[in-house]
Length: 233
Ligand code: 5RP
Image 1 (cartoon, rainbow, N blue to C red):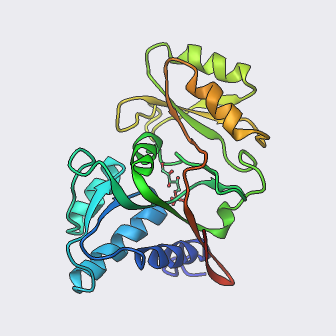
Image 2: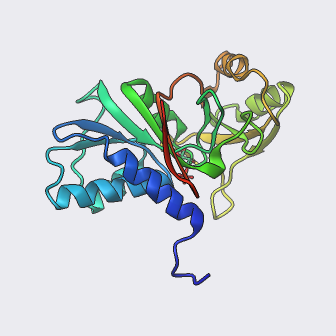
């Protein structure tokens, strides 16, 4: 395959993203997720606004990266402070189980993504079918955002819960920093039998700012694969 050709996974991500953008109505405020699939959502939204097929749509970005992409494409932005309740957010995911629970945070934006998701009436997740999983933790570690203060105490706590813990690094080998300046600990638990129980244990620990388990938050899932696009509610 030529380097110029779109990979299968990218094509499916684009198909899912384009279907999701059809759900946006003119005159609405929409949460804009983070990651490569969400970037395709922003591109499509920008194109429809440019063609006049959508009007007066304003986005709430879930990361500095999405904010910068949306600005570069001319998508009008606002903040959650201005609009604390959103009708709709479209975001990606790293792993999705049959109950539509998720692991998110591969791009490090899990805290703002969860804040925006919980402020949204509809959280619409867009994925290519490779993200589907029988049980969370099978194919992706759980990213846990921790304060740099005492971070290695949190790493020990997470190991005590059964995880193999790796502090995420940036490309230059320095610790990766989230948009809030925190660290990410990627926690490989293996298949997680009771994700809600694990989420509660993570939330009980001071120094853990947020984690990438999104339990009971997704309202709709748009999946694309070789058979086309499926919209699960
Ligand atoms: C970022 C995320 C992303 O939504 C997730 O990592 C999926 O990314 P991609 O669409 O690039 O596969 O949670 O924090």
